[in-house]
Length: 214
Image (cartoon, rainbow, N blue to C red; front, top):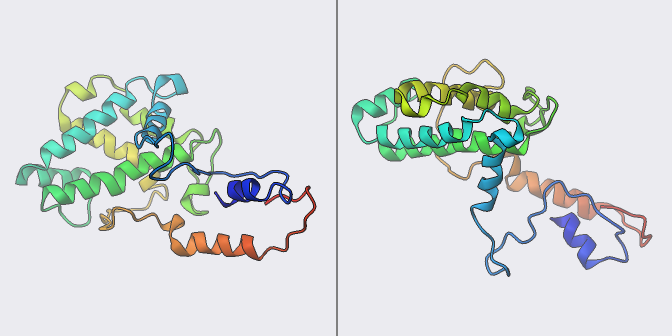
């Protein structure tokens, strides 16, 4: 976003800019107003056949989230969810189940879509283990059976957990998962990370030559 704004604000200084992510219109009060569902529409497209994923994947993902919220209404369902999703501590309420669904699995699909490159990469694992090429397709391979959404919900949720592990257990050595308590936890985009890059950019000596790029 700094790259885009620098180009807009100082066109005589910056001839161009390369921005990996610049949602400059992602603010309340913009015209036209931002559609909060537009990003998730793109994530969903990655999980569809038109983009190379298993045709049944997106429908199975939707069914899995519904199955989580249904199961979370009973103590036995919470217990089974804790087991299927390999949680370090058992879920005790529907709120806990929602936190698990959002922070572990919605965020997993979100991140896989952001890093859905046609080659193995570790950009979105902070330089750690490599995600496979086309990681959304890799996750969708676990949800390729079109009968999952109509069958035993625990079979569906077991497949859904394996799909999420493409990101959640990219290291292949996690024995159980802790459920983050902060819905907005996203370590690599936290205050210090963004501030570091902001400071680095601002402190770079810039000339007035139009060939400069931020």
